[in-house]
Amino acid sequence: MLAKAGDVYCVYNNYLKKYTACQITKIEENDKNPKAVILSLDWSGEEPLKEAELSSLQPLYKDFMYWNRGIHLSNVDVNVPTNYTFVGNVTPLTDESTNSYATWGNGYEVYRQLKWQEIPKEQRDAFKEADKSEEKVIFAGEECGISKRRLNDEWKPFEDAMELKVFPCLTHLTLNKWHKNLYEYLQSTPFISELVLENHNQTKLDFSKTSVCTLSIDMTDVEELILNDGLEQLILLGEIRKDCNIQANGNEQTLLLQCDKVIPKLKGLQALGKLHVIKIEELDIEEVLNAYPKLTELRLWGKPGNLLHFDTLSEFKELEVLTTMDLFGFTAEDIPRPDSLPNLRRFWMNSLPEDAAKVAKKLYKKRKGEGLDLWVTKPRKPEWLAQNLDNPFRSWDGQENITPANAKKAAALYRKTRAGMVKLVESSPDEMMQGATELVKLYTEGFNKMDKGKYFIETVEREDIYTALDDILDLIPAEFNIDKENLLNFFDELKDF
Image (cartoon, rainbow, N blue to C red; front, side, top):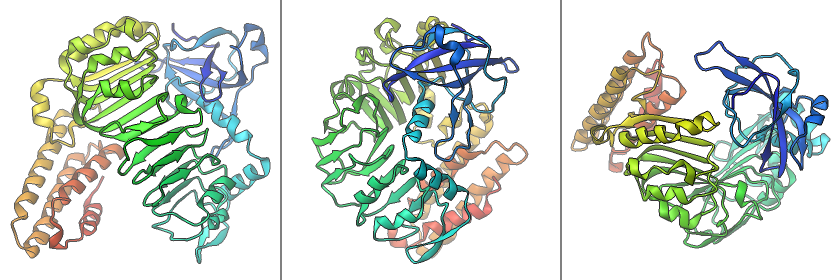
């Protein structure tokens, strides 16, 4: 079904356990792919919206966290997902356009706004006031701006977590050790949306009374982890004990679990709804099914890597979202048939075997017309994989903003620099430092030359170039006592992108 201006839809929001609503306010035709402008509405209900209620609808005004008060608009695909229910058509509530692009989602912005409004007004006002203030406060013996949003205890060392209360709008906290009164602080503020905690030396962790949305946690020696019921994303770091017990307090279906390379053997998350696995070298889909049979979302990223028993995906009957990137080891015959995944509404595959890509597009072409978000791109021939296993710039091949020539030049420059560094390992410390500096110079100048006049190197590409160089510098043996940071700083000074 194609969206039309004035259409009102509702969708079930798993976070709220209620329905939320939106309106299509216009169709933007000035693009080769027309977009629908979607407006979030200030409505939620236990039952789907009824046509008789359309005349009373108002826009949702979003002002949670750092957002300035305003309506919430996004450009989305004109194809309406199957999980959205058409209610009726009324005069659009606004004729504004927007530069924001998104997928249809499931009313998450409405959920965030309603959760924000549950926070006592005096705390919300203090948050907003601090965010706009230039006032200075004393923290850990130093003068700091009261408007601090992020804090890392490596940059600003402190002992007692209650000292953090001087920052009313702090939302991101990175800790590299356990701090006194940490639980007390987290329970006293509803604003810490992201917490990273490493080297804590705790065997039991209890965040049940906190308001954290994203938790990145070092699982080394952890026997039990208790989560808060509003946690949205859990990122596991460090060594994970076999059969570590995780209590999600009934929040498993909306929780997103992210882990590296393999599926950890955990207790307590059998009803997990969302799983992301990154840096995959080899992963057995049967293991995923046995551990988490009720997944509604599965995202898999390769290093690149191989997937075993890919055909097992057809047994995830509740699956709504499936994405893969840089993953191989399966064939066209392993692509799940559309009738085996009746709830699928988003199917993305990026960088996959050529024969599988052709069949995936063919099988799901009809479902795309019915609202499936289908995106299958970068089909790879076997010889491509053989040439690119060690290429950190493989994702550049096929990107719209990068020419094939520059993708090849980047791979060649990486291999040449890496080979030069391997050769230097046999030299003396003085020769190593001089040679490494020269290699960094040539590497950086190579990308400067590629970008000159074309300006294709943006945030993602810049990060790719930096990460590839960082990996090359890791080849320098520790006994040479060479400061890698100095070489990375030299790179920063030389680069023009």
